[in-house]
Amino acid sequence: YQWKGPFYFIQGADPQFGLMKSWAYGDTENGDDEWGEEIKLAEQAVQAINKLNPKPKFFVLCGDLVHGMPGSRWKKNQEQDLKDVLKNTDQDIPLVFVSGNHDIGNTPTRETIDDYCKNWGDDYFSFWVGGVFFLVLNSQLYSDSSKCPELRQAQDAWLDEQLAAAANQKCKHIIVFQHIPLFLRKPDEDNDYFNLDKSVRQEIMEKFHKAGITAVFSGHYHRNAGGSYKGLEMVVSSAIGCQLGQDTHGLRVVVVTEEKVVHRYYSLTELGSQGIEKELLDMLAKQK
Image (tube, rainbow, N blue to C red):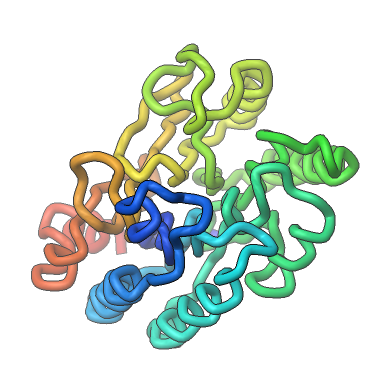
């Protein structure tokens, strides 16, 4: 719980093994029978992270680990191949997994969530790093919990407890990870496949704002985006895997200082060859 000085972590999103081929073929339901390209990109991401000095405190993957939906033909193979790549992450860099819609289904059930938890760990949880409180949420429960309303209620009750506990701990920042962004650019933007519905969005944003949450990091959009709501920053990071816009395959470096949270998106090539830029490294060195 104690602040020990600045640190940083790496955020990635949507390695989504299988999407590149299915997107190229225009068949996102069945076309995901090859993912060699994504394996290479995920390997490149792990190699870039392993080279970093100082080491990041952790590496968080914000959902859509693979493309295959629950029960689909290639899902297990895609998951095994991703695990094989991630096993090579430096042992001193913990991995943090966030569930996405492809991991547990657009309309998750108790079974699809249980299966995810067996494979990747809890679908929502919290952890502390040096005076900063992190929350990992299952955003599918906000998107469509019609087949498991009791799980949505359980997450809501848990979140309220966590935020109440955090308020007593005098933490420096509270940071949230979820797959689906609250919004892409503006808090009042129209409903879209890539954001949470306005009805639920407003309630969550207000809850987060009242709790003093600094930032929410997400993926899902396969492009970089973001905005803010009453001082709460919404950061949308593009994919390690398939790009749907003009961004490069990349990772986000997030530096946490006592006063603020600063982040920058790097292409995998840039991060692997040059590492973190001096300006961010200087912020890490400052208050030691």
